[in-house]
Length: 318
Image (cartoon, rainbow, N blue to C red; front, top):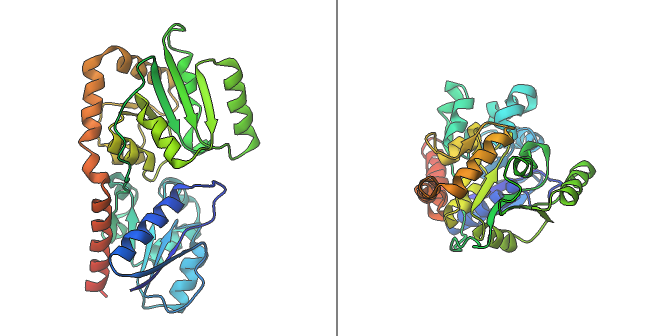
């Protein structure tokens, strides 16, 4: 098939959507298809459009459906789609109506859709090729936070939790990710100045971020909304326990019974979890085992297979 993937432009230099588009391009090429990635559908006789983001890719979706009315169209729903835009914006809802199939990045995403939409939705877990061993530093307890500094990530929740730990506790928070606005940059600067156990590294290469992750005892994902955080895939593949806000996007990645959740915006509860990880070996090892049990979901072969089955479904029902 001749396939176009659209991924909307982003202010983040290495956005999660761009990573997803690049992986899907590579998987689909391995399956024998001709694939290109662009920010806006440029037209032509493509056999399939795979659009990431229902609202931001609306112009591409609308044009493709108008010019290629009989061709299949797949819309992959991001976190902002699922947990905000499909309720708030008519364009996002029209994208859902025009789609032949929908894709969500974790199982809980299905619960945000009505029965009719759910019946034509596929779950495609993201994957990671990271193969680093988990080798946490021994001199202190390292907490990693990885992601661009923006409001949807609630990025300073982990450093706030430090204020509820013993000042003598040998704990550090290492934050990786660029500030996407002056306010976030200023906030990070103030925390660096006033909290000696906090380090903000800014934007670093993916390889460097993964080495920091592999050397950390836990990863904190404090997001307000997530479609399916790729950094959770990476942590699971390495074997790093995750402490995550209890939101649907994180629950869909880690499972409903995962023991490492804390209530959204609750840095006191997060501090208690960090203390348990530091002081209770049984609890910490249980988290490690729970993360490892999810590793298979995030294997590249699993993601590639899900895409293959999705295309087979489109062909069978065309």
